[in-house]
Length: 312
Length: 287
Image (cartoon, rainbow over all chains, first blue to last red; front, top):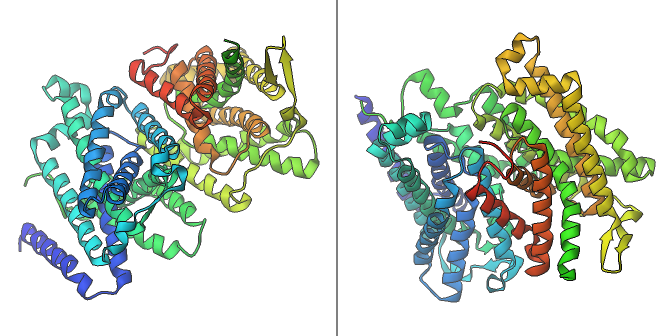
């Protein structure tokens, strides 16, 4: 069988398993898979920015917080249908991304990382001083109590598949080629007629939309949102861990990373306080000993890509 | 006007402290072209070291500096040798991520050992204040901070200008291969530079501990302040660092007075974002 056919069979099998699973497995397994799907979506977007576009953002939590709060405000205060509120979270995130894009794209490298981080911190302070969202006390997203776990699970699966599909087709398009050219040498690519601003903006906006939406799904599951947690740097730590472990700049990397991360989180939840120390230690070890992550190392060894972005 | 005079004067004095908060970060960037995201944790770690010595010896917090400074120098030196020196040749991302991982580890280790409770380095200085012309009050601790901060900046400047090690550090940042040809071992120079950066972090950590309450996760906040100072003033510029500290200090205190105490940090962040957008190289920095 040709590698393409193997790929197709594996993917179809996995999809079928994802769809049927909630009717077979226990609540706990469904919950774990739900988390994996959400983290795959979030990490793929960070990977799209950091791994493919050369924008190491430390501020993805601004979209996570905003997505969560949009969901809470619309569903709780205005009675908007809950999955529409999740979608609106993505829309509001795109609006934020658009309004800050003129400013953040003037920053490069480290400055971009710091700039995005500071914006997220500033938003966290704004929300914790805002009476409308009950200051730092946070909000309970009560309409989410009525949802069944299975419907949230399907929401997560759809978000995950949409984000993976977007990244895959984006990178195989002309834009993907342009992005890789920018990442490798921005001056030369600009001289060849690549519009750097537009390429980066496209990725940034897509990243904002999916991150905001996925955050909404996550908060449907968590139900409680609080500004310092929602806009905290902890989110970026998690995404960074997932992408580095799995393999930065590969599509399958965030999937493997998210599975490992969620499983680790389940096992380490008994050791409160140690889990982040262990995650930090693993990240450093991976950067030292396998800088391309699990997928990158395996690809080099076997020469087989699960989801290749280059045409054969 | 008098209502604004007090936050402005205090902002200038706070700027002296912020200058030391930023100088270590600026130095590491100037020399290695790398950003150490664990710098904030170096500061808070020093605050906790000082707290330990305070309990053990019962001396004034400023005297614990004699123990905390060498300890932090060794720690910075060791971390550079064992971790950062291995990833220096590569792009900036690995350094960013390793230092980020280190900061997470340090922060959570502090949380485990010292619990999330608020701590201070207790001194009588905090409650005293100096009345100037019956117009405004200046907390005595701010004067101490300003003096120590200025002293550190001047000493560092003299060190870089007059000693062999200072020249070696300067040479490695100007022209690495040239410095190698002159018999300078860059890895050792980097380690010394990181040690010195950790020492400045230690000074700011002890001053912060005396002035404000601190928690295990306070490092993040001071890291962002350090970035603010460095970015506003311009990377690698010593007078710029001092200026950046003052601008940030003034904008925080005046912003806190005008909008409300909850927005103190926010007004500093906004100034930082404006400078990042309008003049990314900083006020006194060169492109």
